[in-house]
Length: 159
Image (cartoon, rainbow, N blue to C red; front, side):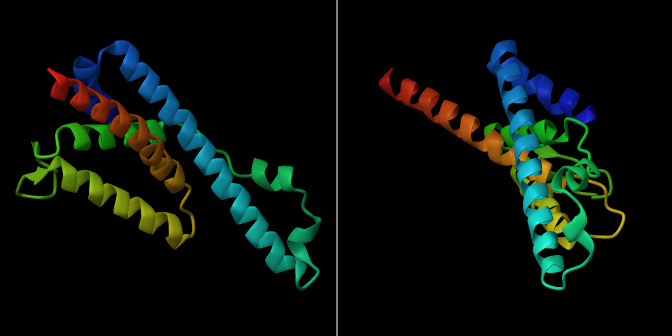
């Protein structure tokens, strides 16, 4: 929520409250959809591996398996806000706590995306973070941000 306050308030000032709320909600829903698709693919992968030996997971119905993995939160929408900030203000200098030097927003966003991509595929034991929801928020956040900004830039070209 700190990221929503830090970056979201700036985006809300630039876009206005209605456009910001629309962006936030669409990206949050999109992140949830991506996470559910990834969980379904994971289920199918695990199930197909057990089918080959005819034991274990084959007896667990899909809804029970998917209900064991809950997704709670708005972190996908927060990652979309980070992406939008990085796209609107790519050269904005930021200080990240452990780093003694400033870093540009675009590198901060790219770094976070790469960390989430790695963590999503690493499958670490005990990692209960929906990494693909974060990436899904960025994917859903890229399209409206890119399209709306390009439309506004085209409008300025006509003036």
